[in-house]
Image (cartoon, rainbow, N blue to C red):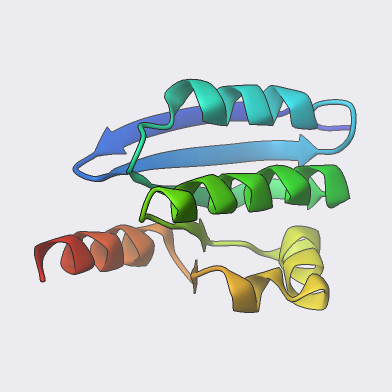
Length: 118
């Protein structure tokens, strides 16, 4: 299993969280803790999935929990740059139709910035 690596950056009105490696039941709590620690209340969260090679239902649960929290605060969780197995899981579960999904992280960031200024 590829270890999970998490990084983030704060931009105006959003937190961008990059996931690399694999998320499964052995480390999904690590992801949940990280999201809770760095997410700013009321901010959008963009999950950059470009370097994520595996995602299971426990990781999906973390993404959806974050989406609920964001929605409660008038923001949203966004998914960006998913490919391979994670993209397939998002597609077959319908999560990619439920959450805003973008081909690139840059597009997600630009969209959130545009909605904040309009």
